[in-house]
Length: 407
View: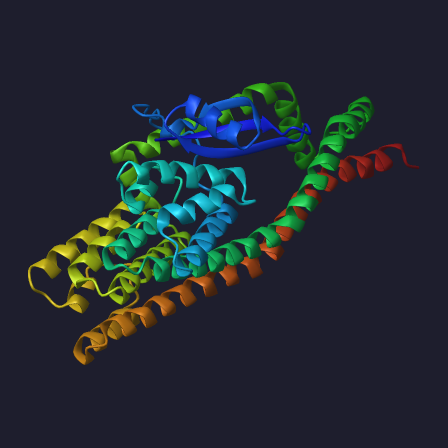
């Protein structure tokens, strides 16, 4: 089975777009004909074409947008909680008013499920469109038979993460607008106003202030070589993307990120929240602790922290207590490990792991809120310094001119 995107028209000339799962393009035309639709375009979505592989480093669709992920997860949670089987729930999402990205994801997943794959395996085949922890949690839900509960928790987690990201985006909106206006005004001053003042100073035999020389030099360089600078920026981004996909370079990059002040803490807190949330999901689903740590290990994105999680899993298989094994993971706050330890001793491991996950998420959200609160004034301060430097580079020569031509 293959997922096909189509564009068709009704008898009244209305345009319709959608996604269907069928054996072939001919089968799609038959389905559309039964629906009294006249197809204009039909093509298979690239990631569902049998035998077709994506080029490494150049994904077709990329990661699903956060809004689409929330919508897809919440719809599945509601439909599965209503008692619908997975294939029927995906079929309803394909026929809903969801965005095209959500419909294509549902169609490709439905096609793979009809071929006999599990939902987790069908979602993993999207090659980076979904977060790793998402697929790991879905796999745990399928093994335990608590898929609806897992999707409900994933939907709540995705909605919380979207809210926190939205706060940072809103904090950046006003500084970005001010920065854009400041750059435009600065460019006009540097390109058109400053050269005239410089020419007048040179005619009067007055030396240029150092800040004016620097600003004029930078503006002239950017104005002359902007094409080369833009090309270098694009090539640099592509090169960085290719290098970070290489195992050795990626390892060095992940180590560097963990050592960066502030950023490293956020990465560790995010990994702790995802690990503990997946662990709590699996334990709540009544799967063995060994299975839980394996699924939680897959939820960690950073390779170095994932190796620590793998070492903890190996220790657990050797017979060590879970709390002692989790001390191998440097990202986990000590208080969460103590909670899990008390859960082991009191036979309330799932409950205490859930509480530890909540605590790790609260810490991460608190840091994100702090960043979003501080981000706007810091950015405004930097923009103010930039504008002040440019204004001084224009005003200082004017003051020198007044001195030169004054009485």
